[in-house]
Image (cartoon, rainbow, N blue to C red; front, side, top):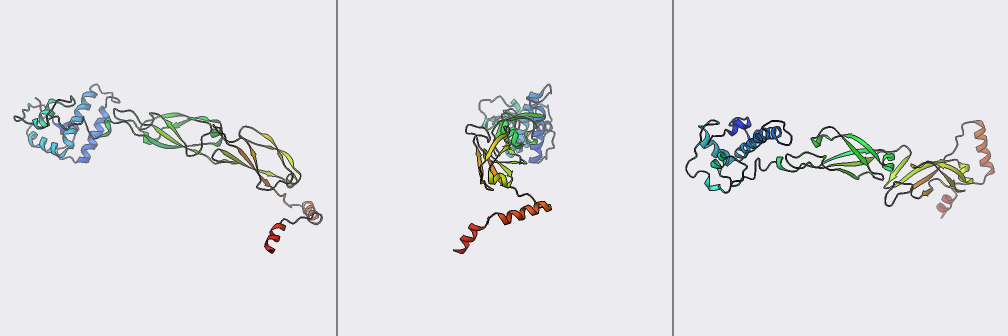
Length: 302
């Protein structure tokens, strides 16, 4: 049979280190992997590279190979000593050449490149995606670049489900890191809902600060209030106070149990920025019997 120069097959010197050996193997395995290679003889080359690495990655096999192969060149006729390699021999797995099995026997060979990930399923990849509150409310379709960790290139179309909240993950099957001969892993996109200028989100509930004038708070009023589903008319009760919450049922994020929108009243005081305004405030202080600290003063006197 012909002698195989495993060092030459991997393109390394005979004193190559373990790390450099693995690096050379990975490079060639990627180059000739039948799933991705366009080389005409890719499958045969891939098996040859895997066999060479299987022989040299194990220190005992490598020492054995070096001891009996130092006087041979690739392609030369090789005749092993009588009984050589029989101690580990068994039924052939079909993954290795006659030379390999004559040299080592086929026992203990888990497959070409055994122990590496080229025959394993690809890895899952985690990444983040930021969406607007409007996207979270209505759902959306986004086009994103593939994360660098996925080792796949191009863009992806992502469907954002309506009602999704920060911290939830969107799973894209088979869009993670590609395996070498196995199924690609999945891509998990962790969602972050961006801060909104007017609304803020707590779980599926939406909060909106609603500025109103003092007379609207005192007398009551009907005002227009925005929601993510459109404007509505809201009745402010007479005597409303700052910080008071008014619930709009089902106006939060959609879902099996939709959230609510809470309108938080904020009474805004007009500025005393003119003589007329100052005179008006002075008149109010004289004519209205109102002490905003009355309860505080009574409590502190106890």
